[in-house]
Image (cartoon, rainbow, N blue to C red; front, side):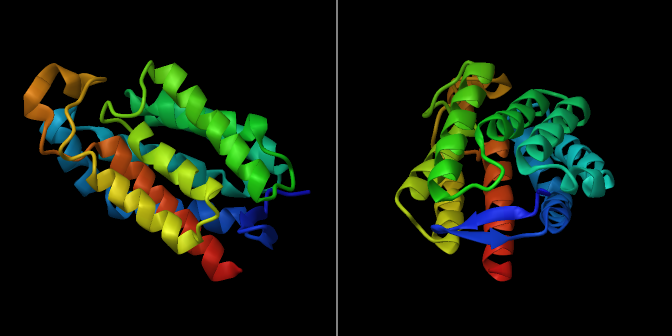
Amino acid sequence: MSAGTMVKTGTMVKVDLKTLISVTADTIAAHADELTALDQAIGDGDHGLNMKRGFEAVRAEAEAFAAKPLPEALKAIGTKLVMTVGGASGPLFGTLFMALGKEISAEPDRANLAMAFGKAIEAVAARGKSQVGQKTMLDVLQPVHDALLQGKTEAEIADVADRAADATVPMKALRGRASFLGDRSIGHMDAGGRSVALLVRAVTETIEGQA
């Protein structure tokens, strides 16, 4: 089975993985300057460019990825992101996809997706030696996982992700380069969290639109 199956609520939905890859790459490219500006405020200033490079590399091999079973496709995408995004974000976003691919079934239902996503978040936390509340991408990933478990719709999940990214603004960074700024990290959105929110909205809207 190819990697064209995703999930909408409790039922199976056919989604073209090539379309998902294209939409997410377009989204990151469209927001690359915004992500760079966020990262310039409290990080290395290269997050937008790095993410754009990684997702364009995934887009370049979209057909090959889409031909694989879903677990293998996600692991391959994660590996590609590790190799091409660079910086601190490459290993973290790559780990997210690789761990998701390791846990998800070839034909996932909602429960399997939620379980696999939870395991992927645990892998990201371990890789980054971080936890929720430290102003990282985990502060968006965890609320999205909670929304999945609560049975929220695609639109609701996307809104949860956006609000979670907004909620990183008043946080003090305790991990990563931003943590060196101490209280000066307060008042700025976490770039990784914003990237997660953008990707979540792109994926959920695509799935909802093709249901």
